[in-house]
Length: 174
Image (cartoon, rainbow, N blue to C red; front, side):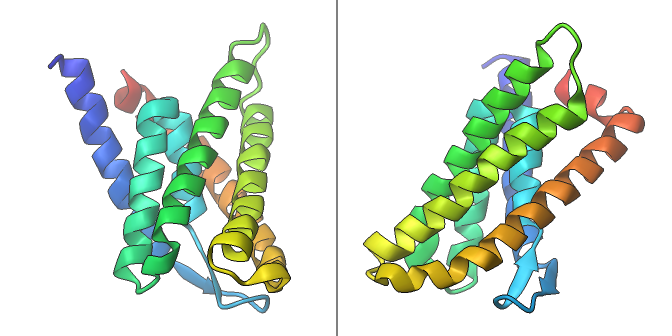
């Protein structure tokens, strides 16, 4: 295995752990439903830093582990698929927008993050509605998931900006 693949694999494992920890440990009470966590921040960072393959795997596995460790095993399969899809779409859109003649990082993050969060909101609604059998009662989680998504996107953009200014991203992705 090449040094590049080993490096990416190690970074994916670290980002998976980051997704798990940021979901489980950092929780902000929400008036909508329970709490808002920083898991989506880690999912988007995984996508933007590692790309669709490694970032998607890290986001899916890390977020699924958070469900398994917190007693929500019935959400684990859905979480894996939803967070994987979020990261893949976010990474592909981010990369495509960054290849433009005049790339704008914040615009790329906003567009890719917004698309990813739509996948999250629709994905959890569909999963709860169809797979968990909640029917239209699953719509009650939509406002909380929208807040979760906006919170995660804002936090991810802020963390990415700090990492970029400190040149940490050049060391991570080289």
